[in-house]
Image (cartoon, rainbow, N blue to C red; front, top):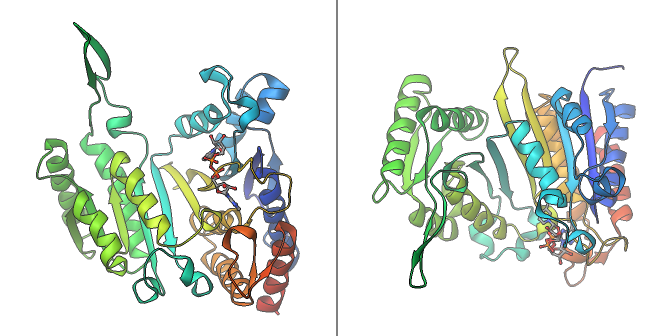
Length: 370
Ligand code: NAD
């Protein structure tokens, strides 16, 4: 039963520890029922780390993250730390982990569960069965490019500059992730840029096409302008499988896709680094939502986004796709049974607490594995 699956658990602030508590129960379940064991280390990040150590993440925790097969991250931040100096704000803990771990590929699935079809902003027939993946380049592009800044031109006139910059190797490494993901999914990729008005977009398109022709000839690639991709996501989202794009366009399009699925409390994510010689990638899994200080400590948080983030870890870091499906099926069944946390409450359904949602999920896992 012993295993060397190294998992670093960082619950963080606000509802982070509450939703992580339910994931720990799911992990215990896997330990007990599936003989899938994890070596777990738990650490501090965000405001709680600042309180204990004067920094939102310590060098020791960063080192533990580098040594782990996967990091499970809850959420950070809250009004208590809003006025701290920028360099020690809770969010800096997450940014440092992303940077030091070299997490350049951000995966955000947009999956619509039948039970929540009415929570989507689109008509049921457009989203029923939706399962797409937005892959955002996370460490390059206009958020990091130089030159940047605001220049005083005199007479009250200023000039603000940010620069979109990508190299071929940056495009290729995220492109490779897109094609590899597509191989395990429906098998096609949409690459999104603005090749019509940006030279960097033209290069992105050419490099993606060349990569596909050279390394993934069996995977169809479709090139799409980012404005059209936004429209197509709302018009007929099921035309996509894996949509790969730059940092800026991915930031926007992943939020558009999120709204197709309903609530923040349902959305998981993964951020992956480059593979080492053994093929192992550093990886961090976290819900899309924040620390939700407005409901923290009240037992109202929806743990599903955090639980689905763990399912992504099973799929992408531990190569246990069947166990990931088990969790996803468990979530679908719990929703079908009518249980709802506050954020996804609908007429005629049963309102439950964070822990009651966890109870129901563990019960479903028991039934599915029986
Ligand atoms: P938020 O995601 O924390 O909350 C937005 C709204 O969604 C709130 O009304 C909240 O109650 C609700 N919500 C979020 N997750 C939920 C869940 N699991 N179940 C039920 N309801 C849920 O965003 P915010 O309010 O803009 O930010 C709050 C704090 O979180 C801030 O300090 C912000 O900086 C931080 N934040 C952290 C992360 C992160 O750790 N990755 C991400 C976003 C925001």
